[in-house]
Length: 347
Ligand code: 1CP
Image 1 (cartoon, protein in one colour):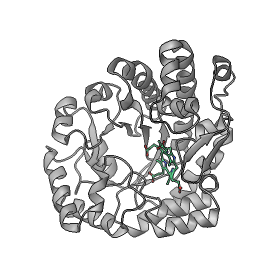
Image 2 (spheres, helix red, strand yellow):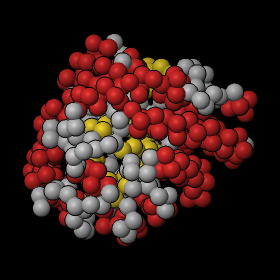
Image 3 (tube, rainbow, N blue to C red):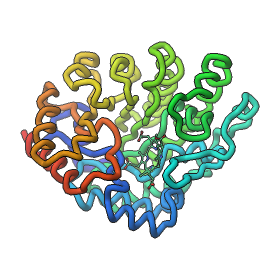
C-alpha cells in the first residue's frame, strides 16, 4: 500500500495532481551510458533481466538522473514465452529469437501455463527495486498482451508481416484462441504476483495490436486484455491498470470499456481526439513522437507545450512518449523533456 500521494497514481485515478507526471517507455536503456556499462558487466541482455540486483541497478539509473514520476521494472515482455520453454535468445543486432517457435496445435496444447515458478527472478526484481526506491516514486509492473506475445511465439522473433500468425488467425482460429487463452491465464498470474511483490500499477504492452483489422483486434487482442483487467481488478481493485495498443487510436472507446484505468496512445492521434473517444472514463498516457528527442532543446520545449495544451482538464494525463526512447538519443535531451513537462504543467 502507498502511504504517500504520488502524481503518477493520482493522475491514473483522475485525482488532482501538482503537475503532469511523466515517465518514459524504455527509460532504462541503451541511450544511458550507465545502462551500457551494467549490461556489459552482465554480459548479455537476458542475464541482466534474470539478475534481480542488476535489474534493480538499471531500473534506478533513470530515477537517479532525472526527475521522473515513476519507475518501471526492468525486464522484457518475452519472459513469459521463455518460461514456457520456447528457448528465448537475443542475437546481437537482430533482436529476440526463439529456438522452439509454435508451429502446430500440438505445440500449443503442450505449453505450460502455471509458470510463476520459472519467473521468480522477476518477482525478486520487483521486491529488490521496491526496497531501493524506498517510496521515492511508484513502481510500474508490466506484461505483454496475449496477442503481442503470440506474434513473437509463432513468428519465432520480430516480424514485419506477421504472416504465420495471420495464417493461423484465418486458417485455424481455434488454435490461436487456445494459445491466447493460455497466455491470458499466465499473464493474470504473472501480474498478480508482481503486485504482491510490490508493483504499484501495471501496464500491458500490446505493441502489435494495431496490425489487426477492427473486428480481429476486438476478438484476438482486446478480448484477452479485457479478461486480464477483469481478473487482476478482482484480486487487486486499487491497483491502476494501463493498456497500450500501439496504433490503436481508432479503438480507444472499446479499450476504455474494459475497466482499465489508463490508456496509452502513440503520436498518430492527438490527445484531444483521444479524450473525445473516451470522455472522462480513463486517464490517457502519451504521446510525444520519440523522434522529437533528436531535436534542439527549443524544439523539445515547443513540442512539449503543444502536447500539454492538447489535453483538456487538470488531471488524467500522464506524459510519455508514444513509444520507447531510441538508443541514439542524447540523455541531456531527456532531462530537457522531463523538466519542461513539469515546468509548463505546474498548477
Ligand atoms: O540490447 C539491449 O540492451 C536490449 C534492448 C532491450 C531493452 C532495453 C530489449 C530487447 N528489451 C528492453 C527492456 C524492455 N522491454 C522494457 C524495460 C522497461 C522500460 O524501461 O520501459 C520493457 C517495458 C520492454 C517491453 C518490450 N519488449 C516490448 C513492448 C514495448 C515496446 O517497446 O513495444 C516489446 C515488443 C519487447 C520485445 C523486445 N525486447 C527487446 C527488443 C529489441 C524488442 C523489440 C523487438 C521488435 O521490435 O520486435
